Image 1 (cartoon, rainbow, N blue to C red):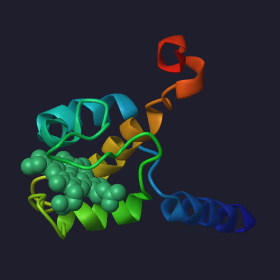
Image 2: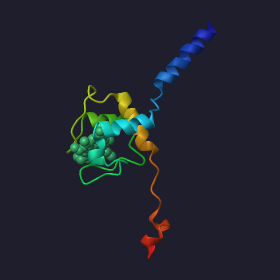
Image 3: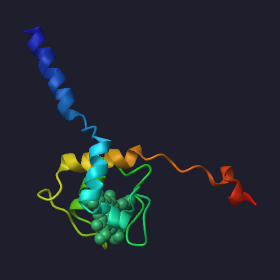
Image 4: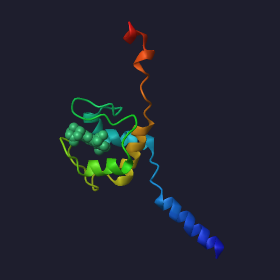
Length: 110
Ligand code: HEC
């Protein structure tokens, strides 16, 4: 009985956790769904879309924005891009390293 309760508790913990996301798949999806066209291949932002990486916004906020954008961005419903796919996309954006500080680049300090 105790074992069963532990198992149930473990399952609840797993379900409660936000999905970790798969960065490699996220990179593929970021291209497939055209996010890169406005946000840049590294999520660095372009004249057509905001900077998304490094340090993307929280998953819940990202999903909410993609489903109901407030500005120029077209909406993507759950039928087009699932929550799990957005978790992968966020994992890809989170995997992008920060750029080096400008002070560490000699050409920018002449
Ligand atoms: C046609 C251009 C375009 C495409 C395609 C596009 N976006 Fe955007 N996105 C924007 C623009 C422009 C903004 C800035 C706010 C606005 O105007 O909606 C934005 C904002 C966002 C934000 C909010 C950023 C913040 O810090 O608040 C997120 C998250 C986002 N986009 C994710 C995505 C994802 C994920 C995809 C692909 C599924 C995507 N976008 C595809 C143009 C685009």
